[in-house]
Picture 1 (cartoon, one colour):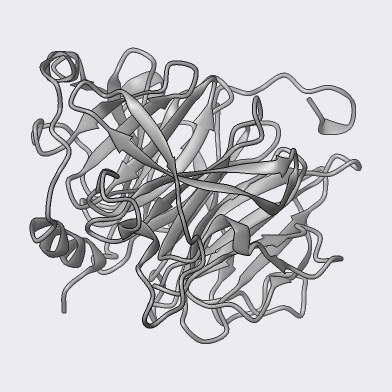
Picture 2 (cartoon, rainbow, N blue to C red):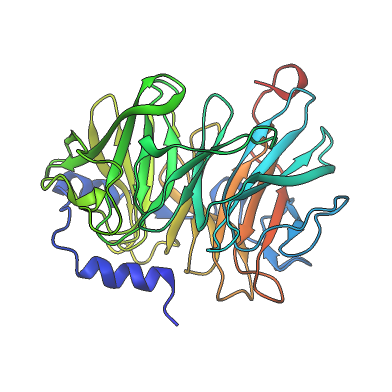
Length: 392
């Protein structure tokens, strides 16, 4: 059976055109190196089948189709994109999407200030194939549906407010979303072989009910021009797909994870194994990592993204050898964990807790029955300095 990565590679090969890198970026890519990173080499697998650097340890916080410990809530199958939200009592919530066609949506696990699980619940129901998503600066979760008629749902991490469909963000095969806290703009990826790179300009900051959806055109130098999408919600079937409405827009080979960090918008394309770097203030796009140009480097099957508070990137693999790879400021690529004996799975939903001491990540099809596992990793990460009650 073909994996999603194989399908993307095949569809990407059939795409009508492709973005060609300018030579300066090829030269910059040569600076990337492989190494042990700031945490050192991986040790042999622990009792959970995870290889970690010395001083780190793992625990399973949820097994799909089983009750989350201390609750009466069964964890969803095929966990995908996720993130954490700080609470006023010093605890936090980890939210996770369910990439399943029936009963998809998203769920959450609530932790107290000591890291003990105190609750688990649904935050989004009535949607399907919820792949990745993104956290907003105003404290909600954007859950993205990955199919041609897919939309975005805005969710309350505490589950107290029903998830709301945000049609203004477009109808297409959504993968992930990221909000730029400096502008309130939402950047979006599309998971097809000729998918596009989008941004949404809300009419009012923090309100995603109305605004302009735009698509990127990238010239050979990496300069980006944004075009309004004429019909963000085309009828399906029968309408012109969103990605094809602006003829000059640039196709990308299977858009995946996206994150905004320190003035940069990073996103991945799995069909060509790249990590892209868009700088909004310059309206310039380049490639941070090109796995096909550097096959010797330890990162393949790029997928979900996360960033540390220091701006280092974490890239989850769908394929490869099931690693979560850190890209440091010095362009060193270093695996910080590897899941063993799960060859048909993928890593998803990496996210630090608000303190930076814990990292959450899922093996989407891990476990004896292949429905998914969600882990917590603890260790001497670069911790962030917190204010009272765990808030920055």
